[in-house]
Every structure is written in structure tokens, then in C-alpha cells.
Length: 279
Image (cartoon, rainbow, N blue to C red; front, side, top):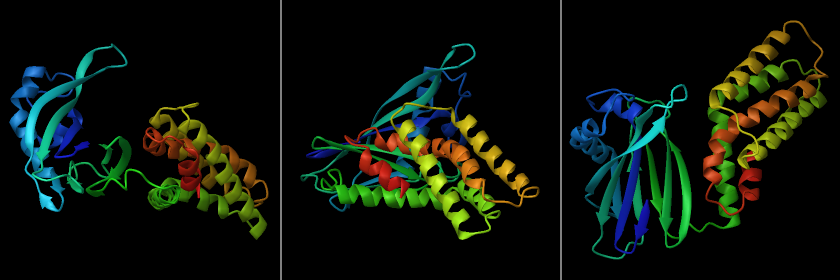
């Protein structure tokens, strides 16, 4: 999204796999042609305009839909090119200078649980990435796109807390480890080693030093939970758990990194966000 003095330009990329769930397309993702995509333009525009709303300076603004563009990807096995995303351009005009923009999205809310959207906003030379889950609203001003250190820290602390509360796999892993801890000292060791370990891989992944496919990371996280739960039946001594926690914590850090990396791509410094997210 680009916010200009008298208009807002919103470029929306939506996956064809998602569109198939809400719009009748002539063919599936791998078979869809450019002509077929253009045939569905009116239906795609109608769905997007139903789900995406913009207010400028507190007043609703009608959208002007532009051209529809196909974005291509290639299959891993054969290298076959196919239309992976549909890109649509919307223009929202304002009769007065744009000082505040409020936007909302309900894309795929009814068909994709916890749908994730990344909104890249440019305004007056500043740029910021907002990552949202499910239906969301954003209230934008120039000040929010030029945050202070305290504002950035607060945002990433709250975001980190959100991922702890919805990250049932990480909670299940820690609870399984803590069940075997017989003393407070053992609990402190477990929590500390997990924090240090996932901080290491989180930082390395955020810097793009290491990267694993999401399916591999999630499988390893699931395996760590199963292993620790099974071990609880056979081993009652919890003093060694901090070592095991550190090893598996490295894997869990990669799981966190997949949601953090995109948020960091337009920040000049990652120190404050990464530290705050870990807190």
C-alpha cells in the first residue's frame, strides 16, 4: 500500500489456491491460464471489494479497480510455470490531504483458519510491514510508520506474547519438560535453556543465516513434543532436562523465525525487535 498526499494505492496479491475457495475459477491452480483468470476478474474484484475497506480521514472511500495481473511460480519437480497469485490494483481518491488511513480486511476469513496477511505500507518515505492473522484492522498515521525505539519494543513484546499464547506446540513442549522437574532450580534451568536456545536460532534465521522448510521445522517440533512426553514415562530424574531443552529449543527457534523474518525485512535495525520478541 502506497499512501500519497491525495490518494491511496493498494496493490493486493492473493493466492490462486485461496481464490479457488471463494470464487468460481474456470480451472485449478496448475491449469489456470491468463485468459481464464481475466474471465474471472469481475468475480475476483467483487470478492476483494467486499472484504477490503478503506477510510481516509474518517470517511469511507470507494475503490477504483485497475488491471488484474498474474504472478507466476514454478513447480519443484518439473519446473512447470503456473499462475500462483493474482495481483489487483485499487485506487482510493481523497478530496483533501490524506492524514489518516483506516483499513480492514476479511479476506479468506470464512475458509482459511488463521489466515496470515502481510501489509507493506509506504508513506512519505517511510515503510513498515504489518503481519496480521484472520480479519484485521489497521489505523495508520505518519507517526506510526516512524516509530520510536520504545514503540518498536512494545509492539514486538506484545507480538511475541501473542505467539506464545497461540503457539500450543511450544507450550506443550515446555509443560512436558517441566513435569519432570522436581525442584525450582530444575525449572529455572529448563526455561532459561529454552529461551537461550531459541534466541540463537531465531537470530540466525532472522539474519537469513539458516533456513529450513516450514514442513521440516514443524515436523521436528512435533517430534520433540512426542519424545519428551514419552520420556516422562521412563525417566523421573529431571536434572538433565536443561540439556535436552537446549537442543530442542534450537529447533523451536526456527519455528518462531518463520513469522518474525517478514516483519524485519524493512527495518534498519533488528536488535530491538528480536530482543523484544524474545522477552
